[in-house]
Image (cartoon, rainbow, N blue to C red; front, side, top):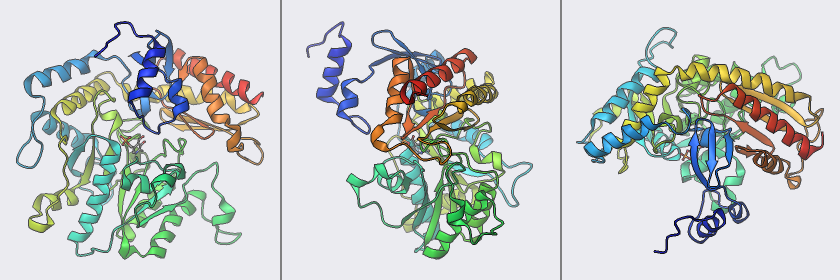
Amino acid sequence: MNVDANPTTASLRHRDQQTLIHSLHSHTLQEQAHVWAGGRGAVLIDHDGREYLDALAGLWNVIIGHGRSELAEAAGRQMRELAYASGYTGSTTVPAIELGERLQRICYPVGEGRSAGWRGMGGFYFATGGGEAVDAAVKTARWWWKLQGRPDKTWVIGRRYGYHGTGFVAMSATGLPAYWPMFEPRLSGVEIVESPYPYRFDRRRHARGPDDPRSDGEMAADLIEEAIERIGADRIACVLAEPVQGAGGVIVPPDDYWPRLRAICSRHDVLLVADEIITGFGRTGPWFGLERWGVEPDLVCFAKGITSGYLPLAGVGFRQEIAEAIRSAEGRATWMHAATYSGHPVACAVANANLDIIEREGLRERAMEAGEHLRQQLATLSSLSHVGEVRGIGLMAAVELVADKASREEFPAGEKVGPRVHAATQARGMFSRLRGDVYNLAPCYAVETAQLDAMVEILGESIREVTGA
Ligand SMILES: Cc1ncc(COP(=O)(O)O)c(C=O)c1O
């Protein structure tokens, strides 16, 4: 192989284009691809040594920040000891056991303030990516209902603006239609229901008359109940939902939404699957996102922050009753879900070291202070003519750009306002992702105050440059 010892960025881009296909591949974007070469804290460094503020902590996942050598050491230690062994039934490893115990302590543990009868998470299954975890959770919901003698309960309810990944189950339940057309038909038996999106919830459309006393949050939750009743509760396995919709644009539901949705699911015998792939591990404050609203899920999907992205690891937590059922099932009822890399010992060792750092350094607390500061600074952008809304929770925030503030009308997609703002922020040394004209921010928990200020300044200048106001 012809290896160039000092390749230029241009030659690396050329080689990339000859050899790789990327997630959501776009030839135009790939021609100007960043070639990332290093990272420290909230900063990414490219092949030419240029530094960028990493406003999304990678893809919401590098929560402790880049460049923590302790995780490299944890991985190296485990690799030298035992890099891999089967995690299929009949085998296990120490790092996986330790991680399971740890998750049991932090993931909706039994304690004060819990709902009646809550017995905690009884077990955890590990996967390598978020979408895979979602697949495992939805399959488990179907499995559970078959075990209860209710085999027709197979449907999944997802929500508009929800993002769950791109495997068939996850893509089908993802409420961002751009992911669908060239792969359709989606999985049958999936219903997408309106999101509890305060800025865009159309109260008049959903009200049961002009004097409907329900709040927007209650109405949004009731839309799920209406879907359950329309399809038939005896056909629905689960509701799959992010506590706070992330990739869809940091959509924070009203406070009365989650308790009501939990009650609806319980009333209709529908399992609640919390997709905590972004909200897990402290992004919104508590270890897991639904804690904020005093709600426990039946199944919880996690990924991203569990290893801060240093190695791929994801998984599903099962409430006690489901875990017990999996443990006692036999023969044809066996939970026949599996993956070669489930419980990968090196990934689990890295996760344990990552969680050690978060606890030891008080990073969740630090993240909440940073989030407060970020929201305060972002609020200064609200006066710009095309900033429709600044919103956020914990250390995740978004700025939604609109053509008209009074009517909240969106810019025509053809104007590509979001992508142009994205380009302008990159030219100023910041990197993140958008959904349309919604700019998302979710830096690492160790982000410095000055870096947050710089992010807001860059975003403000970029919006002014593109929108002219
Ligand atoms: C909430 C949520 N669920 C699922 C996924 C899919 O995870 P992965 O890309 O690891 O498959 C993501 C990825 O961004 C996500 O944000």
